[in-house]
Image 1 (cartoon, rainbow, N blue to C red):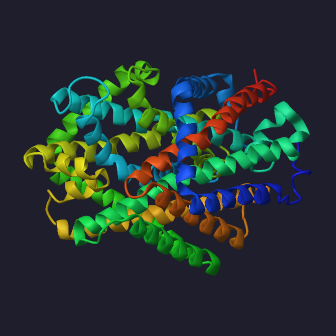
Image 2 (cartoon, one colour):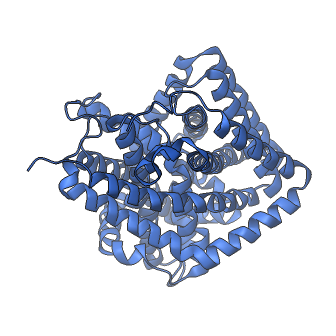
Image 3 (cartoon, rainbow, N blue to C red):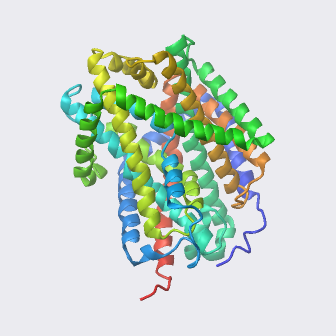
Length: 500
């Protein structure tokens, strides 16, 4: 294998994907109701007839990735046999932990446990058992399964780039199946679908973040959170990010990343200390045990189809849509690691951090809700995007922590936009690991406009449902790609000559 044929830039993926996405934006601007109807019809079809496939696919990914890691193939390096890791263990672990902190984790950390508590998929709502069920479910959604999905894509990208010298593209993972045709129409189609999945998945996150910023401003300062307000937030953030990209202000991006990390740590410590330390620790211990005990059964559970459509199926589709994006990141920082090291670190470290985060935020939410006579659950019922601010309101220094929470969300927004546009630029420049700034800014503007259209189509909080819908629709073809990718990985690993 070599990357000779892929060394010449090919703009097919850029032109085709950008034109189709632009058409989608134009369609949404002029006939938003019709676009919403089409998206909802496709969503209903996929979740009703193929919800089971999302669950089975993720179950398969889990078995496959750990099977590879603990097999004799686990000793294979993601790179040449004499390659050494580019980063120390501490640096590598830190970057993997950083990959686990995003808009979604901030957005859902209080909202999801409380929503599942008030409307559980099983049992009676608003009971101690409903609280235990809610925490088990949120652990399930944010635990190992998302990172198994990311690990599949990251493993393929790292293996074929660093060990086989193929372009840093999703299509390269199919070389064992289609050979040099990865440079032709089939390969381009795979990369175009990767672009779609990334755009839709990231748009969901940007929509969540912008909605939380707008409702936070309403909750704190009374600035009404309308679809127009949310759109303005997205537009301002897009302009700032694009200007930083064009002018080469990499220090600004690094500052945003540092703010995100340190504010995240500060909030975790603050909420742990003032949100009910003992209850949080008890809740974490109990929820972790329930999560591990029900791991297999929950993975394949379909006891409440309607609930699954809005939660588990959405999450699995969202993670699949994020796979090219996060896979690129974890692949780039993992050169020189063995497959076993890669899989165990990628699936266990960030998920472990997420569980601690959720235990602190979710536990504090339940504890403070009880103390405040249901104030937090009342806020969630009115508008679940305010859950974090309603929780902070029950703790000391709210005048300080509430604005800082908005800064944290903004930092997560900027970091996600920066990383996503970088990956999109790579995917549309033949895997160039240092894509052109103009191309990055182009994708930044496209994503901003795309997210605004989805917000305006949905209108207010309902826009989040539209974002969830398009994520599920966009992720479906990429899920099929990932299943084929798994077979390709299995096939090429069997061609490796291993010692002994």
